[in-house]
Length: 251
Image (tube, rainbow, N blue to C red; front, side, top):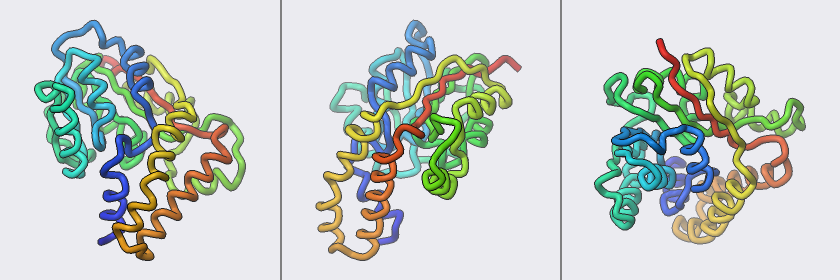
């Protein structure tokens, strides 16, 4: 089993594959102004097991396409949607976020919580814009500096792991430069990182290692995750996921 397969196994049974929260998805929905509209079409890109997809389907009069590269994650979303009587509102699609099979101007909104880093923030918002109807909403969360100055250790780590990390003002400027009008922003709280993501992951470490015979590869993944958690616990005042809500500007 390679490292990707091990990571999938670690995260497959999780409610979330990254920091976030149902309340935060609902706040983004409120900022979007979509609640009063009917018959919406929404794509949730990089949806994982579908925490945000399910909230969108519950909160809005919408058909939501949950898109992820990994079928095993989408299988869990399909099951959860049926259990919550959302099967008619939610459809899943296994596809790469940089090769989406959608028609231009086909969606009223595009959502992506904690996943756009796979493409990079600027490249992702530019590539996805064509799928939005004029005036359509883009809502994405991405790793964001909360302060102008950061500890050197922290900055080195995240610039090595994700060169797209930047301040909220820089990401707002990227949105404006790529044909969007920003309409809302907030940073995820510590609860979204610790209670909703890191603590449940820590609780899975023991079973994960046992499943894989405490192999060197499995132990290396756990140690890397522990290192990331320790970094956040030390430096949470300096970074988070910024949640950006914008509207496709008129051409």
